[in-house]
Length: 176
Image 1 (spheres, rainbow, N blue to C red):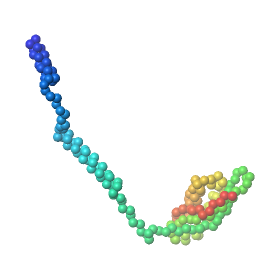
Image 2 (cartoon, rainbow, N blue to C red):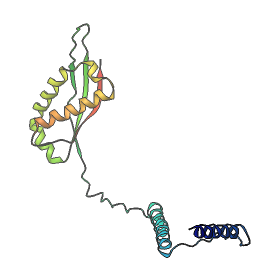
Image 3 (cartoon, one colour):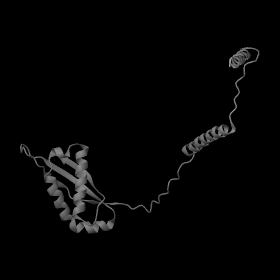
Image 4 (spheres, rainbow, N blue to C red):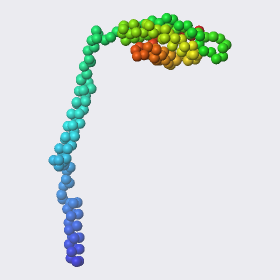
């Protein structure tokens, strides 16, 4: 057993001497196993190909805009309503305020005018009753006018159902 220990110590001493001694240091060599080389090369190729394809689509490929046939587009028709003047609701009753409004209805086609004309008194009544309940503060700002436009559009569509208009447009609004 002592001989085995002595032999092991001698082997270790020789290894240490050989490592420190005459042998030159190994230079760094860049060798990859073939499988790792293929994986890294394939990933680099996919990255470059994907980047090139993305750059092509981003810079050179523009979607073709559909051609719009001007004759196929339907022209909308506008219907003027009579001017309305209503007094606004005022709980304090210090001073009466009035609303003067000119409205135009946007309808999809000329046939709709023929359908709306006999029902126009019902539309005007819906406008009058709604506008008389408004306060001047309800009409403040663009949000107030937008709400008024949406509500008038809804009331017209209810009055002329099953027909529908596209929108209510304001020509003039004056709060005095």
